[in-house]
Each structure stands twice: as structure tokens, then as C-alpha cells.
Image (cartoon, rainbow, N blue to C red; front, side, top):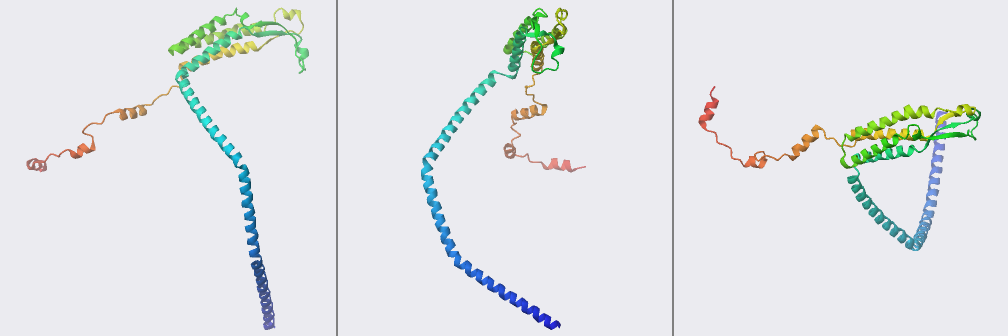
Length: 290
């Protein structure tokens, strides 16, 4: 029974191998038959693609020439603009130093402080509680006052002095002038907080004339306070000079070594050419004695 089963299994395996060889041969014949036709078709498609590409390139060649010429002219223009910008930046850097830039900031802050004195910094709103929940309407305002009226325009001469000091900074660049600017800025901030703030939040006679009258601060108060703070910050920056380049001790020592001239005897070539002194026998004998 075991031998019969083995014969049956062997017959099945041999039949499967025979069918597999037949299928391989048939597939190989099909491939050999289709290969030249496929190669011919690929050559035809390649030739058509080359002709189409040449035709398109011939039609697009003038456009490509124009585009490339435009790129060339654009590159030359950008190079010229970059060269002009570089020269302008170099000249501007030689004229506008960090100290002069900070002085210009102080001058601009002084100008803004003068302008803020003629802007409304406080007003009285009528019936403000009734408009608390409304977003499309605002309460009417009356009795608007300029910022300079609270302290009799005292900040105007202080700002003029700060501007004059800034002009002096542009010419001399002395660090001691920054202390004057800081003192003026602190004085302006003190006047704004001590005089303008209470006066701006006081409704005065309007509280008895209208119901719900409330004094509020306007943009002029923030403008003058920011300008005075700009004076203080500019003065501190001018005194600190954060843009100065400091050289440490190791860098100074390295630069000093580079500037030092070499001694004549330290040259290796001269040391090699220098004749050595002959040692005498007596000297060597004395040196060898204990």
C-alpha cells in the first residue's frame, strides 16, 4: 500500500512538472513572437516623440530666447541695484553711527512730546452708565482739554531743551549729555503723573451739571507719556552705548603679538647659519671633574 501511494504521488508530480514545462515553453514562444513587434513599436513612438519635441522646441525657441534675455537683463539690473545699495549703506553707516542714531531717536521723542501738548488728553463723558452695554454707540463727550493746559505747557520748553541736547549729541557725541536727557525725561514723567493724571480724571463742574458725568483720559495722555519715556530710554541707551565693540584682553594680546617685530636672532635660518663655538679640552675636562 505504501509503494502504491508513492507511485501515485510520483505520477502526480511528474505530470505537474510536464505541464509546467509546457506552460513555460508556450510563454517563451509568445514573448519571442511579441518582442520584435514591441521593439518596433517603441522605436516608432520614440521617433514620433523626437519629431514632436523638435517641432515644439522650434516654435518655443523665440520665446525661450526672449525669456533668457529678460533673465540676463534682470540679473544685471539686480547687480547694479545691489552695488548701489551697498555703496549707499556704506556711506550711511559712516554718517549715521549708533550714537547718532540714538540722538535722532531722542530728537524724535522731543518732537512728539511737543506735538502731544496740543492734543486732547482728557474729556468728560455724559451718561456713561447708560451706554455700558452698548457697542454701536458711545456716550457724548464735552469739555475736552489739551495736554499742555494742565501744567501751563511746561513740557514744551523741557522738550525744546531735550531737542537742543540731542543736536549737541549729533555733533560732539559726549556721554555726559545723556544724563541731562534722562533727567528731563524723568521730570516730564513726574509732571504727567502728578499733575496731568489727577487733573484728567477730575470731572470738575461738569459733574454737577450733568448726570453720570465721568472724566476719561484720551490719546493725548498716552502720547505724552510715551514721548517722555522715549526720552528716558534714549538717554540711557546713549549712555550705555550697546553698539560699541569691546576687545577683551586675549584679543588685545593676540593683536600685540601680531604687531611685534621678530628679533634677528630668533630667525631659524640665521640660527642655522650661526657658527657654533668650539669647546676647548680644558674646559670640558674641568666640567667633567667632580
